[in-house]
Length: 443
Image 1 (cartoon, rainbow, N blue to C red):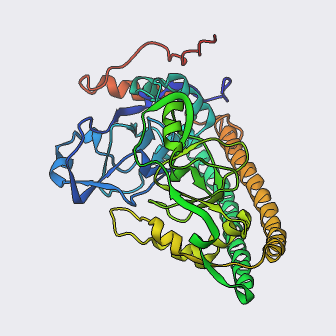
Image 2 (cartoon, rainbow, N blue to C red):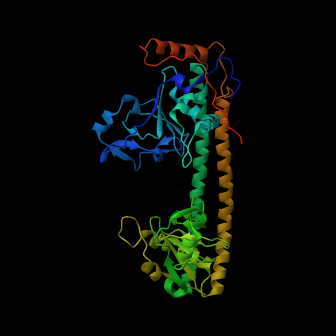
Image 3 (cartoon, rainbow, N blue to C red):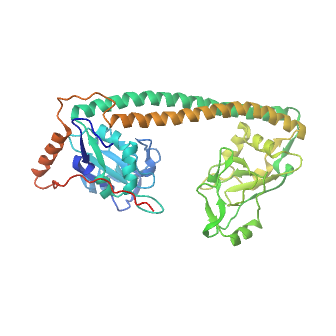
């Protein structure tokens, strides 16, 4: 965004907003019900999600300054961690936000919807990234947010741009919804294939408990060790998802602690892991070459000679077994699957030859689902690219035609500045030229 169409003007967010602030910096007292208090997790995909939100009392809400109480037409902007997500406030229902969420109140001369869309563009995100600071979590300071530069078209063109973006994105959203429906059908297809495997195995095979067909079933470490960097990956239930074990986001422990923990359990290729605290019933096989330590939220079983690891994994992922596993047996603060109940779980146990035949048929069915899943993912990526292209075209003046007779953006900015100058000094008018974001220092 360097050269602008005729009638457009560069400006900074601080020049076109009557206020830019964030939520209250004091942790509010929470109540069981009241005024919603939103955190970063309640901002997803440019929408406000009030599910599982926190609440504050009406008295606390009223104690906040008006500029810290979002209202219709404000634009929220995530500042910490998953920063750079804008959300347009579209109704008058009261709520407040934590300090990690910015609150932008655009001037009446500016379309709030236009501002929300332009803040979601890739170019604006790049500017926010240049201003972001921090190590553990990047944070966009309010000072940086205020200095972000945006292109400002004439008022009527702002409205036409918003209408064109909404039309284009609604089509893309419809395509994404269709892909999600196909993805859901693929999930059902996989479940049906796993159910068929278990049903076929159960027709002629005896049932055995997991304790009878495994060498052992044990959970991980019960004494969380001190974390180090670098070290051995220390995995929890969140690292086992969709049949895979991932060390992404894992913490690390020392070799000394790993040696101590290994007295309880040493992972080996072919072991089957089951998540047993919190999220229950995720299943994965330990692959070759992966060294890690497991905490108590993971249970590990080592298949005996009468059962193939792949068969054991598949039968435990079948819908019937998943209903048992995910129901949980423990009545604690969070869902819990006790080892004794896992050991008593019964599964059909056909011969090794029959297990291998069942797995061949299962792989044939799952390979079709995997191929379709890859095609869906590629389509999703293309849709994301098209979304960015629509926004880039919109904010470079290429999405809608320009009207040469329209009031230019520079006149709008001059009027906003004049209104501020006459508002008893409520906002200081700045005469300096807009500053470009600082360049990244290259090593």
